[in-house]
Image 1: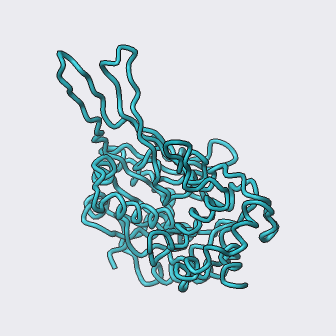
Image 2: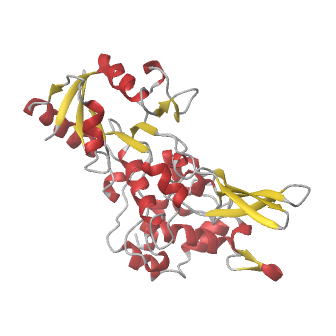
Length: 346
């Protein structure tokens, strides 16, 4: 195993190395909740965080961005793409969020390649951090996206007491720690990591049975649970869905967006922009002549959960990474794991 150890008090050695070449973002705690923000000093880092409300997805798929500017001059149209080449390093991403980024990689690299997203990923480094405590609403053990990570990182940190185990995942990761004179990890360090993994797995309180879930969900599109969620509530103590879109905006794997142009008052120049959209909003599926493919609230919440269950568009694997953010922020206390249980018949 390509692994080293670094004392917690010496973590600034790593950070100083990263700051030389990258703009570094990591978990901070400016108030009651943690968030990913720019890091300048070791004191800014809050590595003992449990979860952030917004996932690090925002660094690759921003809530709002300008794609390009355009101009009409002398009857000729010209445009200028706005593609940023900033090198960023994300320090301390939890396993579930790393898996979410890998899922976004697949989507934005499909038949229609998103150059904006791909450019950000090409210029990014991921320093992952295995979890030391489960989030109250997480169920990543069920989706096999945590609490410890196996791949998808450049470097991986694991808290093993007074020090961190540091594992190398890529050539880039190896380059980053060259000449730092780190101490090689031994069997005791590796065993301590495995011991902590076993202890972590016993602490989870929520579970989602993903076995055959896409097929089961597709076979239950008319299940009464969708009406219950939209109109009556009562699913494990929940209230009716408000269609507020909170679940989609905090979900690390939701990628839907809207594209629109903003014109100058002269109508000779403008910008093309995109911003995150939500399938839970009434306007999302609106079309001309007052048509709407998902006018009813039950259709909208069913659509989102079908996507998370892996049942949308004939999928066979869940797009949910078990982070539990949707459960945490839902004002109606809707729990996706409880909905899955109802569909399965208990």
